Structure formats: C-alpha cells, structure tokens
Length: 212
Image 1: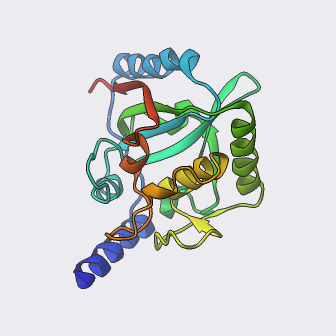
Image 2 (image 1 turned 60 degrees about the vertical axis):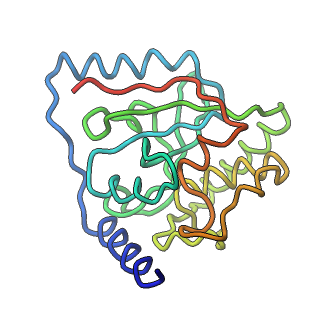
C-alpha cells in the first residue's frame, strides 16, 4: 500500500513537472457556444462560490484519480466578483504555472473550453462575516504568493494543493465546522476535490459540459 502511494505521487509529480498544457481543436462556432455556457452562469455566481473544472490531459486524469468517490472534476478554485468581473483564485503547479504561486484569473480562462470539457459552480451558505473572513484569507494567500504543494501534504500551510486551499479557506471562515470531514485514515490524507462538492453543506448551482 505504502509503495503504491509513493509510486502514484511520483507519477503525479512527474506529470506536473514535465507535461505541457494540451488544447483540443475546436471549431469557432462550437468554441463560441462553449464560451456562451460560461457567460450564462455568471449572473448566478456569488462571491465565495466554489468552481470546479475537468481537464482533458494526463495531469487532470491523474488528479481525478485522487478523488474518493466522484471523478467528475480534476481541479477547483474560489470565485469572487471584483469590479463587476468574475475571477477565480486557485492553486496550480507544474508547467501550467511556472511561478507556482496562487493564481487569480478570469472565469473564462479558468474554464477554457480548449483544455477542459466540463465545469460546475457550487455554494456553501456563508453569512456576511463568514464571507468577509474567507475573502480576507484568500486575498492574504494571494498577496503572500502562496506556493503550490507538489507533494500534496495537507499538514503544511505554507504550501497548498488546489482542494486543500479551497477547503481550508472555507473551513476557517466557518470556524472549523468542516474539520470532521478531513480524512486522515486513508490516502490521500486531508481533502480531495470531491470531498468539497459532495459535502452535505454544499449546494450545486450549475454544472455544464462543453460541446465537442
């Protein structure tokens, strides 16, 4: 068991370090229709919502395999509305993000239909104070240049992987109310992407699959 985990983490590390982003070829009409799907969900979004996407490359396949129950998504981030624009904060590593620092990018870029085939918007109920706390946590991480954790070590806070960043930001805002869902009895330790969107306190707002 331990050996299999080590081999898996090595392969995942190798993918993140060496693989380059791949985009599928999409005709202009289909691409426009896919971007329209993204535009259609923007009015539904509230600051503090969580967004998930499913990539089409080998790295995303490896990331999905870490999920415990549902492999619908490979990556996640936190949504905020800033200056009338919807932006995503997310932890990403490897050749996708050479600086390894926490990213902030428009939702259109995060969901790019050329290298993803689906996305979903989910929501935890947050009070005004809880939302403010979460926003401060996320912005502090961004300003401090939080690095991506290539070793997926949930027990460190100076570096974080994607679902860890989202979960810890939410859990801090909710005063630790989600702590009971941290898994320390099975690999991977901590939280996986599906731990977040399958949580009973989480509500699906909208999910979309891109046209091929």
